[in-house]
Length: 204
Image (cartoon, rainbow, N blue to C red; front, side):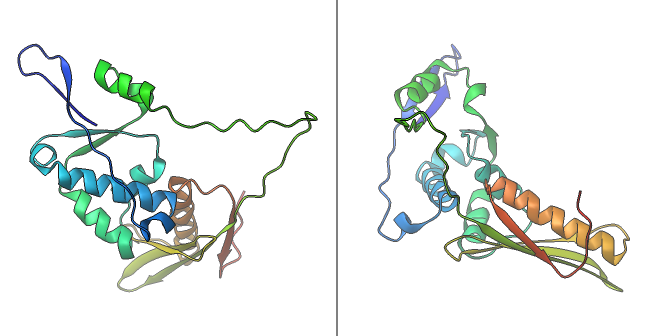
C-alpha cells in the first residue's frame, strides 16, 4: 500500500494498493531474496511516485537495511541493490508509524506469530539450519582489502567485500574481515553460523 499526505490539510490518504504473486522460481528464494523482489517490483511499478519523492519503507526486515547499506554484493542481490539505489528510501520500523492509514493497514495485515502448543508443557526444541562463513583479509603495497562469503543451508553464496581506508597489519585486516562477515550475517538474520578463517584469531 502507498500512502501520501495531502498538500493542504496534511492528512494521510491511501493512494495505491498492490499485490504480487511469486513465480515458481521466486517461491524457492530465501526470505531476504523474496523481500528484495517485492521491494524492487513495487518501486518500479510506482516509479512515477517513488522516483521524485522520498519514500518511507515500513518494514521489520533487517535484510533490507543490510541490502541498502552493504558495500558489495554479487548475483541477484547486486542487481537489486543497483535498481533500488536510484530511489530515496528511508527505512522505518512498524513501531515508528504514526499515520492512521498505514497503521490501519498494518492492523489489517498483522505479522504472523506462531504459537506452537506443547500438550505436556515441556520445552520444545527446534533444530535451526546452520550457515557457514569464510573470511580473509590481505595487506600489500596497493592497500588493504577484506572479504567474507556467507553460505546458506541450501548452498546459496553471498559475498561481501570492502577496502580498508587506513593502514593496518595482517592481523587487523583479518579481524576486520571477520567483523564484516558477522555484520552481514546479523543483517541477514542468521541465527546459527560456523565461522572459518586461515588465521588463529582470538575472538572473545
